[in-house]
Image 1 (cartoon, one colour):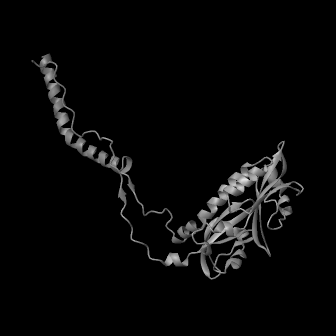
Image 2 (image 1 turned 45 degrees about the vertical axis):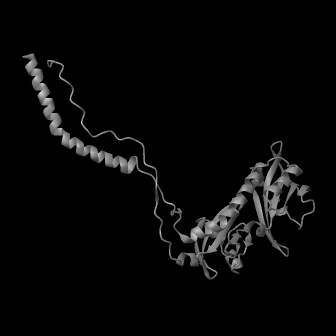
Image 3 (image 1 turned 120 degrees about the vertical axis):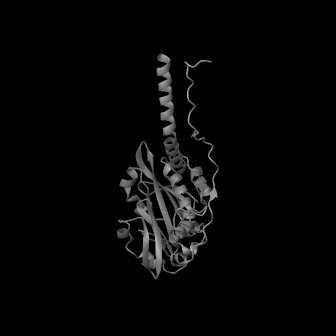
Length: 291
């Protein structure tokens, strides 16, 4: 009787397994498909994808990034010097960032305590920078853009401290022409600031662009498009001390160009993750069966 009952239960189990096998296989195939599509996807590399699809923004980025990267690298070094620098430090700063014109160190009253080169090529007025003392006390930087009969010069000031008290400024200054030369096409790039024109470019529209109400425009956004000075300019802003620099370029020409044919994406390596087999597990042997 006992052997008969066990045999009946085994037969019932076989029947359930056989009737459910087709459904199980179908569901497992669907699971494998989802796994391949959304979890363990085969990677591909699309070399034609530049991230930014706007041709105007692509053009602007290509023009200003080589310039801005060098400016940011210098700012990191300048901002990290929070003690009175030695002359060797100033000379090394000029060596590492050879587009700089010089470095001058002044105390809080404006008295020069050191400078490289020893005789600057042009007179420098740092008094307006010293007026921003509240910024320096909280370790923020300041900047000025000055244009006179000798041209344009940009001054960037970082505070230094003695016994944790603001004691003066390290001022690095440069001619914008020396910095924008790193752009792939300096003539196509215009640089303005909330303090005035920095670099006019070759279009002759620099003054008109600098005269726009940038202080108001920059309250809303740090990037945009503007139809002005006879062109369609795309622009990007960034802070320089309390000022904002704005890089611009006329995007009309690049936006009307026909797009290049898209290149096929290169297939990535095949995944080596193994997917479990869809074959059903074998039935366990009947322990009561006769050998």
